[in-house]
Image (tube, rainbow, N blue to C red; front, side, top):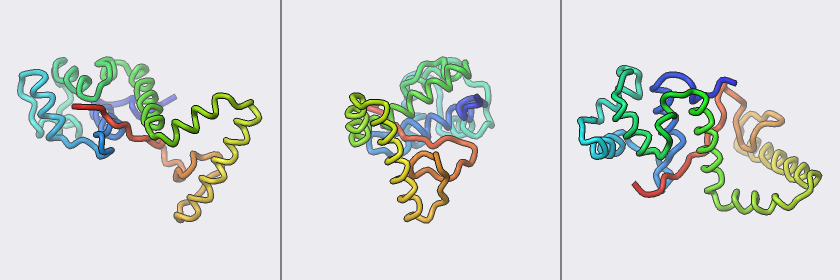
Length: 166
C-alpha cells in the first residue's frame, strides 16, 4: 500500500506539519520548529533551511537535524529512514489525533461493549449522518467515505494531532 508518508524527505517533513499540531490545533510555523531544532542541536538550523527541506531544495540534512525534527514532532527518528515504519507512525498519529477529540473518544469507549451487530448499526448511522452533513455543506458525497470526507483525491483525510508542550 502506498502511504502518503512514504516518499521524499520533504513529503515526510510536510506530513508531520499536517498531522502534529500545536495545542490550539493550529499548524506549527517554520520559525518555531527551526528555533526548537536549533536549540536542541546547538547547531545552525534556520527558518530558510527548514523551508528548503520542506520544499525539496535541500535533501541531505545531517542526522542531528533529522533527530531534532523527530524530537520536536515526538516521533522516532526512524520515521525519516524507514518508509514502512514511517507509514505506521503516521497512522498512529492520525488515530491519536482523532482520539484526542473528547467526543470521538467517548463514542469509541462506549462502542467497546457493543456486539458486532451494534457496531454495524453505529457504523451505518455515522455514515448516514456524514452523507447528510456533506450534502448540507454542498460537498460531493461518496458511499462508504469517511463521514464528512470529500470524494477521494488520492490522499486519506488527516486528523490533526495536538502536540503537548514544546
